[in-house]
Length: 412
Image (cartoon, rainbow, N blue to C red; front, side, top):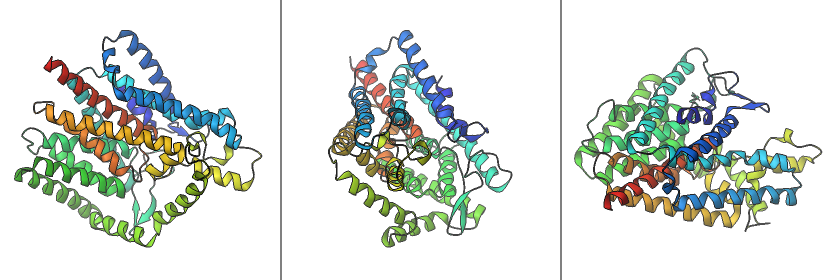
């Protein structure tokens, strides 16, 4: 069941012509159907309903209520049809995956099996992406042949980088738990997946995983771990330098600084987006614009003025500005929800790393440090509004809840 959800939430990695057909078919929607079915049967068969008693369950119920409010709010404010509002909001149903994970992943061993499954899928996916970049086109996506250029190099297309980042953090945590010996099961996976971030040229993901990696190293505060950190980063950068002939790691950091300073490149577009959003947000700062229920596709609407279509395109587009997107969608009410949710996630993470110094230490580290990865990268990456980001966030929250219950049961 979990494998079906993993693949469907990721559009079957665009390996088939039917993975996503614009305006007609999307396998992510099929994943929602599977999720509802799996939750239904899991609730019937499971004896682990006790796990539902946690603050994250309440957070998700409140969030779904906020999404419903936006559906009615956009009808009132922009006269958007209920059908369009529901279609725009449908990916928030993936927050219910939290309940599925709570029930289906009933042991630390089961959780590790799923994490390892996703890691090996990521390794295969990155290998296919390298073939796709240098050889025949494998993927069925508009960016399959590469998109845009940075530093004169066309950016590689790697489907579902969200899962690759997710599994990179897991590999880091495996390496930093226990003996942490560098082998394919830990260090080499870290090198490989970190190299994929450099190859993809996704700056926020790269900087965020590096930040988490360095933070993990400092947390362990051992010379051996610090050396392993240096080895992994240097080895990853060296692989990409050997393949492409450029120091992409250094270049990405330099270019990011220059774009922010001069407000050009992708940051130039984001600055314009910010201005439009803030102007609209000030009209309703408490509830926000209701943009979670607005579709960015102009073809979804009829008989609208050009100005309104442009506004819908800006508001409905879940662009690469995570915190601003959330504020735009849900206003100050959503901001309060977000702060409380992140604080709770961090509290759980800090608590479980104190409890587990055994074979489950890697899971405890993962729960905390993937949460930190989300906090940092949410500056641009919209984890909480996209199906794959929601999926991984809910999985992480479920891991923390499981570990917390496990400690309470051991304690008696």
